[in-house]
Image (cartoon, rainbow, N blue to C red):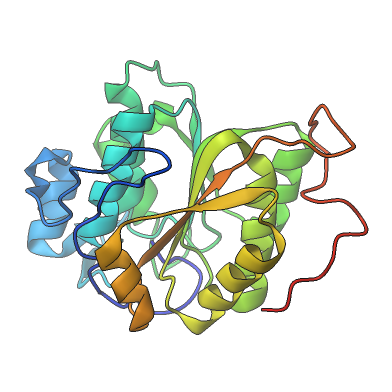
Length: 271
């Protein structure tokens, strides 16, 4: 969800096909029934409205993640079974509800295993509607809520040796913020963990993705989302781009919290 900036563009990534490298998402139907979502989220999507902590009613929720993205998060949680998750951008709580619900369905006791970062959540544009939705769904035990800017939270998480298996980046869409988010999230991922960037066709986000492809190929690999997603990218309408964290094989091994993504004299890849 977009919590730190621009109005979301609603586009479809189309049907996702099997990735030949990981054998995953071969049966994903992004247009499938949303009735598998928690009741509060179903109501939010069907009525396109929600309520804030003070009782304020919000109508028209442009910063909610698309249903396609919510289904992608849901299936990724079910098939990859991550132990800890993180998202940047909480907004009205749609993706947060999916993360917390699926953590519960995996049989995890509520131990704040989903971290959500959003500095604007306490203020009038949101009135804590996202956090309040999680509380109303009785999922608060699964949520580690950080009402701060991600550029301050992420370094602290890294320094405190935190690691995550699945990260969803949908905060500020300014280049510098996306760059910082992606840099730190790549370091926070466990080996084999996934990082998904929303609104990949936004020019700020797309530029960061180009940097990653050109310069961080030794640390992350891009996960194919199939032919239809590739076609969407070709015409400038790709919604999601996903990277997997590769095992570290550099000179600073074994990998620790302060191990860099690449060696100091790495060549610069133009992008």
